[in-house]
Image 1: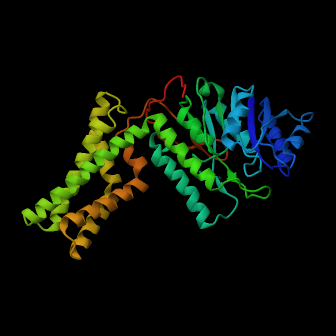
Image 2 (image 1 turned 180 degrees about the vertical axis):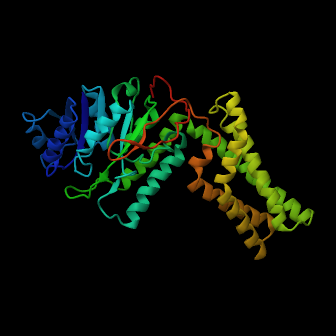
Length: 400
């Protein structure tokens, strides 16, 4: 059985349509199902309208006092669910209920534990022309999550999705304590899963209801990322990574200053030594210190050091170029070598921090023997295989 939770607040104009269409979609897939509406005391009688369909389709309503948040509504609904597959979707029709048919099919045909409706891949996207500000905000939220939790989310194309299915056994022993509105982050950070499949879908324009996202939800999102980073152990890894990065910056500045000021080398030649030396130091110290617990201690892992170093150098190339060019420019404008070099290192580091962290971390992480269903096309065929999920300290039983 599939149990779908629909968190609601003032969704009276859409709730009956979304419930009927969701039930029809799951019925078309041949799935026994139940729809669980978790309503936070909507003054527009959303809960009453949902209950009115109980004689027509398998729906039940859980009423809560006051607005307690979308993510906690999902957890509350799952606690009352009877299905061996759990799911969630919005009730404002931005998530087309017919996508449930493809999600259920993908979950079973690819033997996956998680199926995510993604706004990417063939047939994916948004039916509404988003403003540049909304597109930037959406991209920024996804990219920030991938940077804070690179082992967990780097290969997920739509970690912000609010529509997905997960097998109930993947949550056995897991205590979900989400904050805000992104329950998928909590699930991916804590659940026991091996295989994930993403199903592209067209995110519909909002025609009914209004957005519940505001400043409070954005702050909760940031706090949620921080808690998950600590829970998964990636916060400790970040501290080590930052420490190594600082030592690399010191090496860069010190070597360039020594060669240019003490040995009278041309600055450009000094950069050709200082930057690669700093990158090599960062790579091997991260290999020995930062990511030592993430690597598979095998002959294959040790033999792959050169290919990993090549990948690391390639990913860091843009940051290195920014470092060198800004150092040369500042020195040409009369800035002393140590200050110019420090500014160049900072610029290159900021670039890598904001744009390259997930790719950089993959230079050391060794994948566990897991596979993912990848991204599917509109016919349910596998189109793009995502990388295997790097091993991470995900316990078999969680009591956070």
